[in-house]
Image (cartoon, rainbow, N blue to C red; front, top):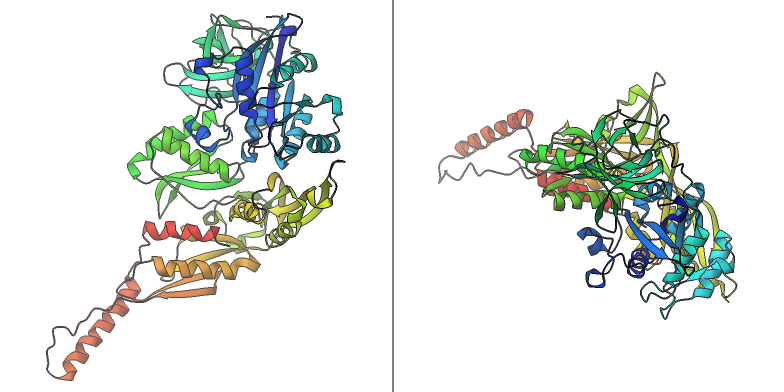
Length: 609
């Protein structure tokens, strides 16, 4: 197809603003899906997505639309996630498009992720079409929200499109606007083929299936492809487009979005961001790939049954192919055995990965408490990353510890400003600025929305921050965050000693001001979860050699006098003295084994506030 008749675009919005529903109307209008096969949120095929009502993976689909002047156009749509933890999916979709629909809920207005996604699209220099959705709702305020969009993003009123994705009104006008306002792909059909891999999945019969955007030239099913980063070559098993199910075609031409079944069986042979070319006439320069995102949250994944370790490794490697932002490395825990230290973009990302592993690969997992990666400067000036307290060097071996810091944007009704400030003050945050988002149609300041910006350590977000934010604002607040770097703080390692022996799996890195209170909570929790022994077991929290909290698990008392029905008191005293000496010797040589249940119960302490 002529590139001038191709349009590549995606839909960006805050979570639950109607992206997937709008995509459903596009599929119906263009006849891509037959009416008897249509169902709500058609592109969200994963059970997890349908249950939660959110998009987790970006979905590509090819549609054909006829404009009022009778011309036929191929529209390649990529539906993107709206949650902040999946912003990497959004960035990859934006790189494969020339334009985007910015969807805003006419009842809720601009949210934090609306602002973040718009700024991201502007970085990629995409043409944006603002769309106000849900105008049919009784509580919708399209004029007020239109004023907010004009104020925050600078769009003109005549650029805005009003639509009800549920009813379908205005959806056809959006497709016409896509053809009119979004430029066609600017690739070169005569140049050697270059295709950008923006996503990939693993199929046991066809190997790695790469989702691609053809930048230059064309790919035919009779060709042999080459991965430019590794030089690996393979016969193409199949090429095709998503309509919306994978549909084989003879070739993919310049500007088209589709897939290539490569036949590669090793998940590392073709990864997201690679450039594919034709082996017989290869291109010389690869396309700029994607900047790999740094993992923000780390947690250990362990199989509950040690024999499932190999299955967990295979599942993680296949999932990593489908989710390029997931990082894995093997680790061994004294409490939980062999497992993997995994890096995630956020807590929601961690939760989704855990559920996908358990559902799609039938694994029973144990997940340790999430932590963050610290930057440690050693005495010699070398800087290392530490993502687990157990890996932190001795205090004598380093000079500084720096923790990751975020820029937070919170959008909420102005009546919750006091509650939000109180919450942020308790989280070691720094206030940056506050701006009221108020359109001309709003009479009072109380009905306005406020955008607040803070700087806050990432570790403060792990301990129930999001739930507290929603609770204090009755669910009206929305949150977006970006990683800005590391900041030096007075951080200390708190060791937990059981029977005077340090347990590395229970160590924590805490701010000095919080170390004593958190250490006290930990030892109190352990006292109730570690089973009693025949001897007294001290449980201590310590910073270096200084004990900051202590609890004691009382000894079980064996009644050694039960067999004495009488006789001299010296006989009883002799038995008690022998028991006392035995307990003293047992305390010196005895080992306290912390049960797995006690270890897992302790993980709940991090969420208490």
